Structures are given as structure tokens and as C-alpha cells.
Image (tube, rainbow, N blue to C red; front, side, top):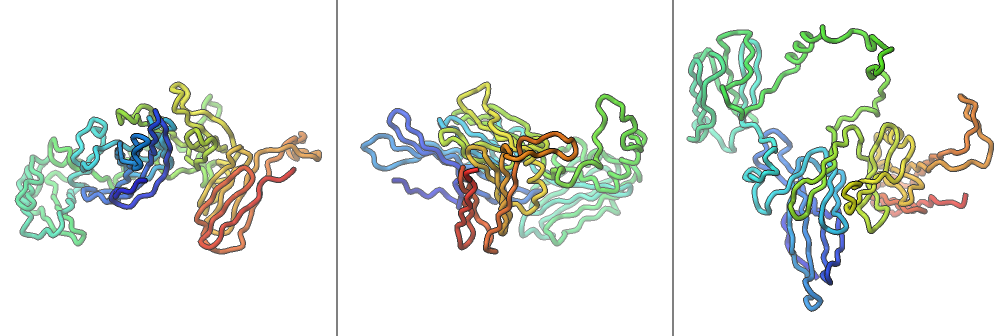
Length: 429
């Protein structure tokens, strides 16, 4: 019905089927990791999300053809990406923002308004001490000493690479131009050493008015600045505990409470204008997993809220209430953080339990609170407990790596390299 070459390898992360005015369409999201040659500082790769819609125009036409093809680019693999059921929008949860780019256009050449706030990669990096400055420039491949021309003047610098003017301008302050040097490093970079005339003077910029470089502050300088600001802070952890809003005691935080990633955001893109319509900063609400609760709706996503885990259902049709809280897993946010080897996370569509598995063997099942048939008391508070949330551990009879994990209301399916395990979760009592 459809067969077409779409370029580099990809994986399908979401797809929907649409029927409008007897015209059947299939919209898919394709995820790629692609190399970015102009990336001087980062990993050298970017994430591409391609939104492809294929359609059969009429009943007489047996073949499907592409009617819509749009590409988003970002710097992190999205935690969640899904097309709205009506095909009019797209929602993404990621640590780095995404933006649409025209198909076939290089990311560095894109001048669209949506990309105006994209941070350009620095042309050079520079550091300084009390005595000198070091400038580092990434050279084009196959560069030789003959391709480089560096001219030092007391208050001016001129750098030419392969006949092209790379950097020229007045320096912030004077240098000892006779003692300044440059060298080609083994990692194909040009390192320029500028000796300050006025020792101890901190330069706020390298070349006056030039914004193409990035200043890198070393740890020793950060420590010196912190020491100068020490008088603004208290040596006591909590000097006034009776204040209305006492400060957080960092010593009470456990290792699993610390998030190393940047805060993520939830964005909705309009399918026709390709512009962002909604942005929600998730802050410390860590993304945990996604699950399909209602096949007619978008997949739900689960976020950590304090110690709990809350399940949210997106509604594209409700502009005022686009995200609905539908379930809570008590203490799951805290419990899952201690599982350092976890690989997959899921929950039952009816929210009766959540489950996670490690890379090998072990599967943890966390049931929702249920009434107990016996009398039970809390030992600390002495009150009677009416409900108990059970936690169970299943150990697979294999040491093969776990490759897939899926939950239904009654069963857990666990796929390894050589076996498919079925764990019965639902019981009579």
C-alpha cells in the first residue's frame, strides 16, 4: 500500500489512524539521531523528529502517498512525543527544546522566527588568569600551519584561517604582543596565548563588542568569587528556624532526591502553523513513563510530584484543560528513585498497579491500596489501618537481558533475548 525511501534509519515512536471525509490517513512520528558537523562544543549530534502523514485520496486509488512532511530538531531525545487524535497537533516532553525546520534545510541556515532564540555555537572559547588569556579555536579538518595567520599588536588581534578573516578587532586591554604565542594542538584546535600588560585585571570580554566567543570560568576562579561572597551567607545551616518559611535543610535530602538533569518542559505544537501554542515547565517533576489508557486518546504520561507519582491524560480537544490528572501512585516517586538499575516502567490501564523491571531478572510490582480482611494497627500512631498497598518482587528464571515490558490490567509481559515471560498480576482477592 505504501513504500518509499525516507532517508536515514529511524524508529517509529507514535502513530495514529485518521478518517476525514472518507479520506484515510496515517500520521507517524519518526525519531532519528543525526550528525551535526557545525556542532563545535556539544556531542556533534542532534535529534530529528519527522512528522509524516500518508493518505489515500479516494477509494479508487489503491496506493497511499505522502501529503505532509515536517521536521523538528532538538538536542535531547524526547521522553514523550505523541500526535493528537485529530492530527492537528503534537505534544513533546523533553529536556531541550524542539523547533520545526523546513524539510531539506540545514539547521545553521534556518532563519525562521521560531529558531531566532536558538543558541548559536561559539566561534571560539577563551579563559583567563591574572597573567594571561587563552583562546581556543576549532580548526577545519586538514588545516596546516600555512593556513593560519595570527597577527599580534599591543591592543589589536587579527586571525586569518585559509585566507578568510576569522577574528579581528581591538582587545579589551593591552597585551605583551612580543610574548604572545599560538600553537596547533593534537585535537585539531588552535590555541592562542595572550600575555596581559596589566596583571591582575579581569577582562569582561576578549575583543571589544564581539559576541561570537564564550568565556569559560575555571573552578579556582569560582572558588575565589564564592569566598568573596561568603559574608552574604550564614555559617549556620538554619540560623532562624522560627521563620515563617524556613530554608530547606540540604542534609535531609537523600541521594534519590537529587535530579542531575536540567528541568524538562512540556510543549504543544500546532500542526498547521508549526508554532508552539503551549509550554509548561515541569521543573523538578521528573518524567517517569507513559501508558495508553484509552486508545481514542493520546498516551498518558506519569510525573513525579514530591514522593508520589501522578498520571496525566492529555486532552487536545479541551483548550482550557489540556491535561487531566487521572490517577495517583502513592510514594512511587520516592520508591522508584532508589531503583538505580531500572530499565522499563509501566502501569495497568485501570491504574490498579504500577511495575518496573531492572536490566536483569527482577520485576517490582506496586499495587494500589486495598482493604485488609484482618485488624491492623499502625505501631507508631496506634490507629487502625483500613488499607494496605502491597509490593511484590518477581524473579525471572533467566539471566538474559530484558528487552521489552508491557502491562495490562491482568498481566505483565516481559521480553528477554530468548523468552517471553507472562506474569499474572490480577487475582481473585
